[in-house]
Image (cartoon, rainbow, N blue to C red; front, side):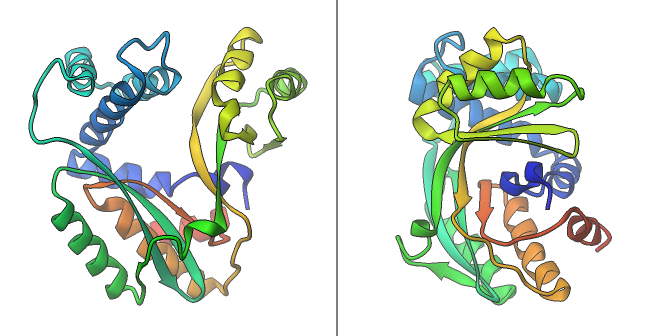
Length: 251
């Protein structure tokens, strides 16, 4: 399994679904608003907001939409109901489990949607704490590799307190304790390395390996969860390969 896909959501399929539904800007706006609410509206002082804005710009989100999302987060603009950050835990069947991070304006709608998706695939919602103990929150950075910058990234990451630096499939992945998130960001910037993606991710302590048919069945559930409008991130302990994702895309 690619190290880059280890912590990421099923981006290729989800990205296509988002574009088809026109939901990508909604997700990005929520991410920006929450980052601004939690860390302030100045991206130079708020790494999470800076990275969220970078992702929005990369997706060609209009500047005024970005600014409105920031102001919604800081409370300068009252735009709709209050955004709620809610984390759910779930069983995916076949011994696999997941953590589902949601941002919603309607808790009842969200939980009903998640329960329907999970039960349809043979899973179920789990009680708080029954799954989360299997995951650790880590600072994760991804840097595009040009074949020459690994040593530079390695030194910058370790200087900032990272635990692990790997290179695979054209990406350098850096993982460290959650509290090193800003330090890694600053160290990479100082070294002149551009971050492709970053965030505080939930990494499974151990992965569950299933046969190809079971893996695909669980990936279908994860994909359906990610397609839900209120879902921001899904983390699972399922071990899967790029080939598994390609089969998913063929569905």
